Amino acid sequence: MAAAGAAGTVARTSSAWAAVSELVWATWDSNGHPEYVVDFEKQTGTKIKLSYLSSEDAQFAALKTGSAADWDMINPSLNGSWRYIKAGLLKELDLSKIPNASLMYDVFKTTKKAQNEAGKTFAIPYLWGLNPIIYRTDKFDKEPDYNTLFDAKYSGQLAMRDYALESIAIAGLVAGVPRDKVFTMDAKELGEAKKLLVAQKPHLRTYWQTIGDLTNLFATGEVTCAFSWRVPYDELKGKLPVGMAKPKAGVMGWCDCFAMPANLPAEKAEIAYKFVNYLLGPEYSTQVARVGHYATTSSVIRNKLTKEEQATIFIDDMDVMKNFMWPVAPDNYSDWLKIWNEVKAS
Image (cartoon, rainbow, N blue to C red):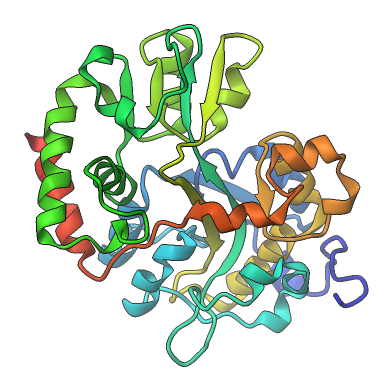
């Protein structure tokens, strides 16, 4: 049972953290709309400056090389957090400063993926969902699957995300690798996946980096089928005939985490704790559910949503998460990145 008042709004308890005029949040453009954080800004007097990410690999590289010195809060994936933790890039988190963490669904509250080997926590899961195939229903006779993304019949109309982990895994599924082994492929299986991706490249309109760019490509008719986030579906339904396919081979689930860079100054860390508590609270949860159609890891507003609203963000039946494929960056991920760079250079 959550502690009483855990979900409440942010209170001004310290002039020290209130004096922090701005925090830079590196996140995805779908997670960090300005309207999602305006309540926090009003409550604290601290401006949230949004710095949108192009890929998780780029985020990790920027932190590791020190080229992201202005970031105060970052957005590692749950299944990729181990890379940041192992590299010493994240600050250990004090859960006593995040009371709304007590409201998280058990599957996220008990995960070890955001901890180091000693059981210390370095990231907080805050947002999750699935990555489907988005397609123009007037251009396809049947619902597409992963094989469709490699079909020369649709050459010039297809798009893939510029992200090694998911793209190589999808190629592995198309090559026949079982879903429970696709993130631990051996050298031979990776070689087969690479062949498929090299053959696929001439048929792609683009490798997309931001979801806004992909949405625009759908809107202009330049792309009719893509491995995607759900954003183009929500943005364009009612305007264009669009569908959202969940491939039987396995739907890619995702979970984003909040974390702080290891060298974040103490005064900024204090207000950053207030911010992650906000992300797990009612204001952000309501905005991101009703506007962005995503679910937070917190149960704080679940019972306040209609059944239709719950179904839209996949929390009407929490067993749905058992059917997801959760992408996991393997120990040999450097090999995956090498393959991905070779595919794009081919």
